[in-house]
Image (cartoon, rainbow, N blue to C red; front, side, top):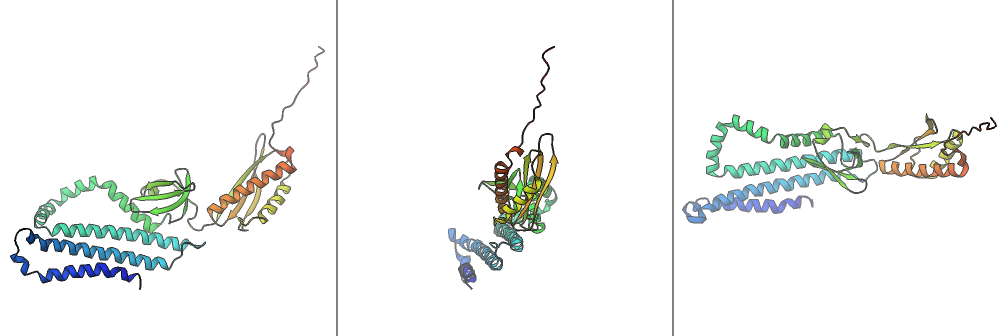
Length: 307
């Protein structure tokens, strides 16, 4: 019930304003000077009070829905999906409430109502002008609504945008905030994600495959590398025990390229696992097969100088 108590104050203020309008409704006709504007000011306050109630109501409903989903869990895909939709719907709702409140306040002025009649009479021309001038803003708003429902990404999804790796931190109607791995923030318009390709590493699940490339001489024993990889993975909790592969992925002029694939439960863990495996494999080669490190061969031909 503690969420609903937040509605008490805005409802109380709005009810007091409403009853006061009824109380001095007939008396206000006799008021002159600045006091004659009091009824109209009271109407504006009632509209603001109702808007306040709607803002708080949306916030309370959001709290109730979010309470059912724990985003801190390891398997939080569904929670992030629902939280993303709720956040976007609340932002859209707040925007519409503000728009409606401003419209009602403007209509409450007699002079604005008269102008409004002429405005709607020429709505065709005005609509075209406003449409062209607000094209970008409206496009951004529609893009935000699209993202809320199609969800190409969700809150805390791991993404790669503009060559940077990070997590979706905020989703707003007109911009998205990406928290980069080094704690910088990349702010991008919502239209960017509908018009530009980007990588989403946690679209359907959080687990990822990490790759490690080693470059060695042709003399390296691959079976020994596989045994060492098994030993390394068994000693670390970073590996989720799903995928471990060591394959020769390329043979170049001077070196052999070996690719290691390992799996982890999420993107930060996959990064740490890749770094760990790379370090340990290099140490193993340095210690046990130093002659198999990359080298350049030079053949010396001794010519007969007697002639």
